[in-house]
Image 1: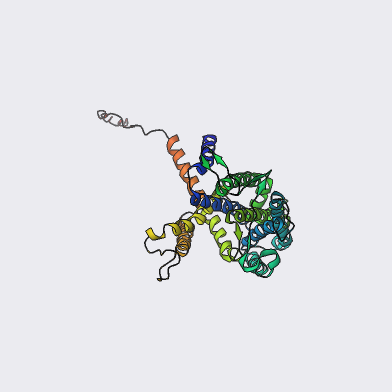
Image 2: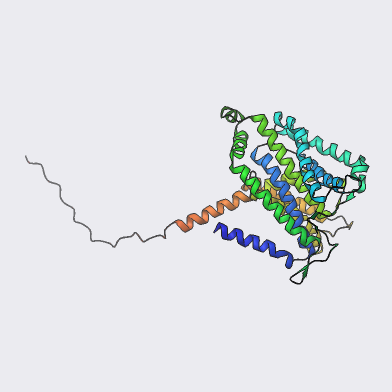
Length: 369
């Protein structure tokens, strides 16, 4: 059944570009990029128990690293090489910060990573030759083996014209699949068990032979590389990167993704990323049909679609923490277990027996005098 569901899901996802328009494909691209970054943050916060508010910084390193390495001004490297180097650059940035992550935990690590966001935003605004300053930079389209993931060249499959969104859709699916398999492999292997033990009790993990500082640092580096890959995917989807996007709000959004989806779960992080990413885009498109939500650009004092979306998934976080602390993934897991138990339990049988005539009471034997 699991294999059948997997094949059906992959088939549907591969067929969607033939039926959906560009708007829905963009939502899917943004959601897949956010899912990659959320999986990385889930490994760090959900599995290793490390709070990070600097995820947006590593997303910016991946996005701007790709733009600078592949564009002009810059080295002008092949775009595929630039994408790989951008991911490694984000991992190197996480490695430079890993000594702090290996020694600090909890709210103290959160405050330390918060400084990365403000520092990175300042660098993005001031380093005009690399980042383009306030206006940002355009993103060079990715090319693999002469195939361009842009709309410059015409491509038609089964009578459907394939533009940039349709081509990037399959690239996003491939990268998301790689993220899934690698992250689940880490969680199910020895590194994942070591990080889970470290999250539950540092003392017990150290007694069992887990190098606390090294595993914390490694989790931070791996999470940074996932964030760098998400940054590259976002840059390719947006086609232009600007500094204001990679702010503190983006880091908070990623925390909301893993809390709503479920800490320490790859599937939960993906579900939370889709929810948090798609909700404001859908509310923006259908703002004129929603009550109490104003269309973008109006100044009549009502709530805009972006603010309304933040209110909604803020309320979702509160409900999740109150009624499902393990997130959407835990809720679905409990529902599946309940359904399996109902299917496995035998049907109730009638245990009542027909009424029998009362048995006459036997008189007690009198004692012999």
